[in-house]
Image 1 (spheres, rainbow over the protein chains, first blue to last red):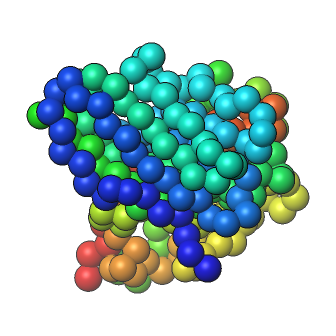
Image 2 (image 1 turned 180 degrees about the horizontal axis):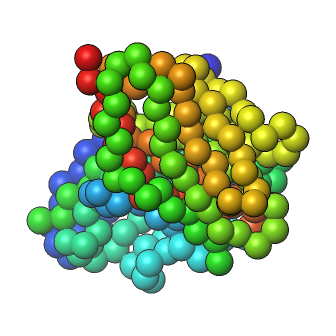
Length: 116
Length: 114
């Protein structure tokens, strides 16, 4: 079946503009995660959605970052008033969500964001 | 707080030789450990995971990893490296009390030379 998809694959924006990044998880996966991967760095956790529970937003770096998950499926990560330090690859992952910390995360190809 | 260390930024091996990519972790409670591989301009692909039971875990593409509780390590191994194994490898840890948050290491670039 289809894997996790993300759009756009690349986004170039000017400093101060808002951007929206989209993630379509694997069908039937109730858990969805966003990570940020900066050049030469590991993955930085941003936010986690599990079913109808309140999301874990503990990784969002500032109030310019927000995310929604509509209908338990598609998710949008929004960055307002982008800054150059926001330039990174934003990765989305999904998992079954039924096994707690043991279930495998499946990653999308990422969105490369460049803020000029 | 949980953390993962991958002490080597780069590992170089000759094709046909065994390879090891090191990972150590720190958590409160029982760890769930994962290895992922990332090829250029691609997302992360799952290789294997340790949940409980046998300390030696076998995964995709001939990779395996050994969980060592006393040394808090989960090193990735392969008996005979291929040039196509060249990629960026990430180790990650989770705990059941914080199921949504995977903590990743900074990654190790594996280069296999013919």
